Every structure is written in C-alpha cells, then in structure tokens.
Amino acid sequence: MKKLLLTVVLATSIGMQLWAQQSSVKILLNDEERFSFDSIRLEFINANHHVMIGDSTGMNNAANFQTFENTFIGHGAGRINQSDWNTFVGSRTGENHVNGSNNLFVGSWAGRADSSGFSNTYIGTDAGENNRTGAKNTYLGQGAGVYDSAGISNVFIGHLSGRVNTSGQKNVFIGTTSGFSNTTGIENTFLGTSAGGNNTFGSNNTYIGRRAGENNQFGSGNLFLGYYAGANEMGSNRLYIANSGTSSPLIYGEFDNSFLRLNAYYTELTGDVTAYGKVQANDRFNVNGLPGMNDTITYVTGIDFSNDLLKYRTYIYTGGILTYTSNESDWVTSVGEPIFSCGTIGLIGEFTGWGYDVIMTRNENNPDLWSTYLFLNAASDLSNPPDGIIELKFRENQDWGVNWGSTEFPSGTGYQDGPNIPVLLNSSFETTIYNVSFNCATGGYTFTDVSQ
Image (tube, rainbow, N blue to C red):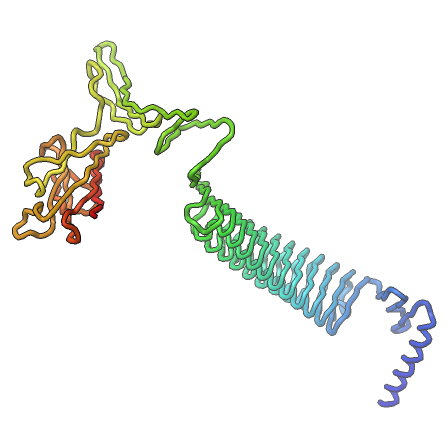
C-alpha cells in the first residue's frame, strides 16, 4: 500500500511539473478527457454539461439518469436529482429533489426537502427547506418560507418572512418576519418588518409599514398604510392610514359599507367638491368666512285643492346645517305653529314636594333635546327616614297625562307612567349638582354629576 501511495504521489508530482510547462492541463478518465485547466479556467467536460462538486453531490443524477445542465456544489447537493437545468449551491441544498427543473437553491439546506417543485428561487440558509411541490416561488433570507410545502408564486424576502406558509399562493412578504404566521392565506402583500406577522389564512390584504396589521389573524380585504397602522384591527375590509396603532387613524374606511372617515381637526380641499347625497355637519358651514343661517322654517309638503287643505313640516337649520325635521302634520286649513315632538318638559319629584315642575331648556338646534342643572341637598330627601335617594320623573306641559319614569340611573330610557327615577345624593358634597339631559322623542336621559 505504501508503494502504491508513493507511486501515485510521485506520478502526480511529476505530472504536475510537466503540466506546469504546458499552456493547459487535461485529465483523462477511462481514456476520455473530463477536466481541462488553463491559466484562468477549469472546464468540466461531459456530454450533458453538468458541474457537480462535493461529497454525495448529484449521485443519482450522475449514475442513473440522462439529465442536462445541472450545477450542484456542496455536500449532498442535488443528491437524488432526476431533472434538468437546476442550480443547487450549499450543503444539502436540494438534497431530496427528484423532478422539476429551473430551480435555484443557494444556502445550506435551502430547498432540502423539495421533491418536484419547479422554477423556484431559494437563497439563504434553510430558505424553502421543506417545500415539496411548490412552484414559481422566490424566497430570499435565512429561514424564508422554511415550512412552506406547496406554495405557488410567492415572494418572501427577509429573515423568517413567510416562515410557516404551507399552501398560501401569490403572496408578497418583504421584511424580517413579515407574514411570519401565514399558512394558507392567498394574494396578500405585506411590506415592512413584522407586517402581517400574525395573519394565518386572511387573504387579499395589503399592509405597508413596520408592524402594519401585525395582530390581525383572519381578516381579509384590508388596506393598512403606515407604521403600526391597523396593528390591532381584527376585522375585514377596513382601511387604516396612520403612523401608530391607534383605533382612530387619520383616515379610516370600511370598504364593505362604502364608509370613509377623516379624523382630522382641519381639512383643506383645493377645487370643487361635489356630493350626490346629503352633506351633514355637527357644527356649522361658512362661506368666505360668513356663517350659515340659523332659522326655523315651515314648508308645505302637500295640498288638497278640492278640500282647501294642506300638510306641512318644520325644519331647523343651524349654521346652514339641517339639524331637525319634524313629522308631517295632519291635513289642516292653514300652516300653524312649528311642529315639535313634545311640549314643554319639566322635572318633578321629592325635591319640589311633588308640587311643581322645574322647567328644562329646549335645544335650539334639536327641539327633541332638553337639559337643565339640578341642585339637590339633604332637604330634598322627603323619605322617612331619609335614604339619600331623591325620586323624580320627567313630564310634559306640567301635567301627568304624559310622563316618563324608570328605575335606571344615572342613565336610562324612561317610559309612560314608569316608576320614579332614583337619583342619588353625593355624600361628599353639601349640594349635589347634576347636569340633566332628556330626549322626549326616545325617552333617553342622563344625569351627570358635576358637584364641586
């Protein structure tokens, strides 16, 4: 054995010395030229134009199958390949690949479990490691798409992007851990670190910005733009444009309800604005700095010429905004007083000895709304012994014909002939002060303690 080894070493040494004197070097195997060296090039000479470098590289390919133009470099790369035009570079890249052409796997274990995928590009350690049948995917980054098994036409770029995707298709995830938890969701676009990080099977979403839509797991059809935009929104068909995880983004929308909200204190528009529906506001319009009108107007809404009768409605405008529309009147001979839902509203109870009403103030913009301040003290409590509760009710026109009561406090809905409302005294103050509001159209009321 020592003689054989010495012979090989001597022959090699002598051969290299002789080759060094030549312009190129050729190596023959079984009397056929297989390798050629010159000053700048190492040529692998084989009929099928393969390049295979590394232990166990392309073993099946070389021994048993007539395939073409594969390049396998690294331990076990393309070990059982039976197809053409693949490039696997890195330890165990494409190790279990059998069928499927035009793949590029670069990085240790990249595409290792792939069996029949085609036209895939996996670059990075473990990129696309467990893909078996997926095709036309591009995964760039360590662990990108590592657990994908059957995905198609996905683009995952970034460390662990699309990590647990199994069969999701046509997704684009760009950024570290973007689309990390996506399994079967399709046609999503997530751009930014952790964008859509917890999405599992939501589809047709577009999240742009670091952590945009991060915690939405199942929603579909969302559009979130900005840092952390929509990060805590769990629904579908929503629009968020924001630079934080706020639930009141600068622009919010609901695609399924054709709804758009601007959460802005000041909005400036250049050019014309056209609306084909109602335009409403809670404050007032102004034109060239001039405020809109405040007025109560009655319009005739129907005429019976044969009987000389008519119907009408009352409208209230505040700052140029329509804030109230009454019910239509019955047939009458002439336009009468403005139509309001109710007459004068007052409060009556223990604090008045049930003898008179404290009249409330009607809201000038909406005559259904009434308000007043209520002042209560120990003397207002007529219970024997005193219990710290002042019972009272709302009524119309200082008459018991129409009254509202309920057991709910501090807010509730009163109803005709309901029980007395139990209003609590605040023991921390000598005088308890409530800001009281009431809606005579709905019976809704609120007692807000403003004692001081």
